[in-house]
Image (cartoon, rainbow, N blue to C red; front, side, top):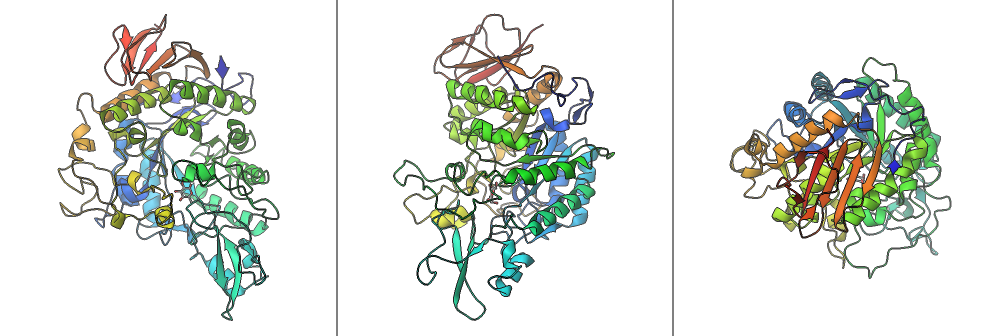
Length: 569
Ligand code: GLC
């Protein structure tokens, strides 16, 4: 048996709760609302368009909050909506304390927070501390000020190698393809220093060894905390510090199968990732968040996007004096395999034991191919996707959903002329083009028979910023609402069922031996069985009454590509 939590740990929450109504946060008495929360990721450009310009925005999100309440999630995480030239769709921030006019205004952000709180939903915003936009005033000042200046010392400006400094300072690749270094032209017109950008060249990395950077981000955190946000999703949380001396790295095998994806590169154990100094930053942020513990609005949290390699490395971000959660991408990376699912669970849970933190689970986000497609696409992919979701929702801890997965959306094949993702442009002419992330970011269909499928008030037949495919009408929220067997109704039922036991089922999980192709576990009174094989399987002895299945309800046996929950009487 494995457990996520030492019951003697001081941070173990009391099982008693307040709240618990569908669509509202069920907050344990210690206020740690995130420990078992279901968080819905809103990709701001693609969720809902309030003004009809074809791009999602904050008023659009506010107008659709009732959908999230009815779905039964506890919180939403909104991707960056700050002032930005949108070279990486907001992950290139030019002003951390304002809203880009494309998405609305600060007062729209305040309205969104107020409405979400009224509906009992918490709001997590994205924080991008690894890099700024090249249009950020700091970077513009650094370019103007020249080598050796305090302005350059906020970024990673270095002399090049080679006789004339015309070779990059080291061999680091950008996560988005190509080199991680760009050379600037100095004010006198001569070729000058190089700056580091682990992502696009428009996203210069900050120098976190400069105390000014840490002070600035503490101030940014407080700016949004004072406005009432409930938490932060910390972008590239494992990347802030780079090994002293900037040594060369070991490059991924160029002959390995498949494209060098962001996941693959960002997961390597290299001098630019997961350096020990980064944890000092999160200790400081822990203290900042704790300053709000007694606020009438409730406690605040942060979740790290840390593509660290092992479960142990990921867990270091949630030590009791650091952040509250860390994404567990191992669940997302697992193949459709009972053995792999069991392995991820048995590796994840003990890694958190020393720290008293709960795990997180996620199947899709705005950076990866949607899981229905990863699992084979079509009816098969959808059946497996629903089954994996049910297995995920039964586990202790927090589950992160990505917008559109509740509709069963698949990855969209985006035509080359419609592509917008910098990682696609940086790799498209190479031997290993990145399939890009546009295909999981296509705007949500809310209703109607043709694009924009009620995404916004734009004219019928017009396309939003990424074109929606034909044939999405039956997948829209309106079409699936109330439709028996629809994926949306399945998610609603699963979230409602989860709510009735999630905070009381305990945090211990026992993996059951139910056959080679079966991933089965018991958690308190709940037994979850997932059949990843190709033939029906018998149910483990002693399972209780059926609560819910992801497909055809089992009668004695469970069909392939299906999961079911059973509860003891
Ligand atoms: C994170 C984001 C991704 C972004 C990158 C650079 O991985 O999830 O979308 O492109 O950081 O900020």
